[in-house]
Image 1 (tube, rainbow, N blue to C red):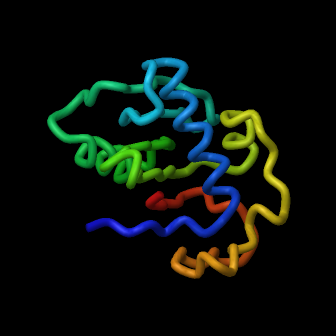
Image 2 (cartoon, rainbow, N blue to C red):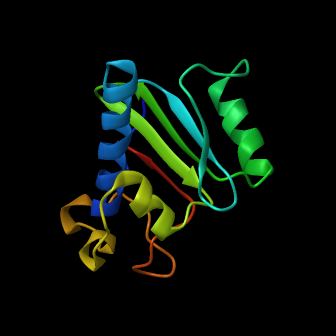
Length: 132
């Protein structure tokens, strides 16, 4: 059984973007997708159908090639959803989600101690994974 690990406001902002993108482009809030970017942070493709046999194998191949991407998988939505990104810097993410981050977004919500700690504390992580 999965367990949630979200503990930061920045995670919620990216999750909100992912679910709204699904709603706008597919017509439902919970639909798996991978957004592939180039090294300059420009979106190259958005896959709503897996281009390979398995989403996680596809994402692992992207990760091993150091290809910037954003992956959203509503594993058991609306109860559980996985969100991760790889090699996406803060300015790129803010542009994608159309929302700026503020410093409080990187402070762990005390009642949600289950999430991993930022290392070093308080910067936007260019690679991250979280279960909602």
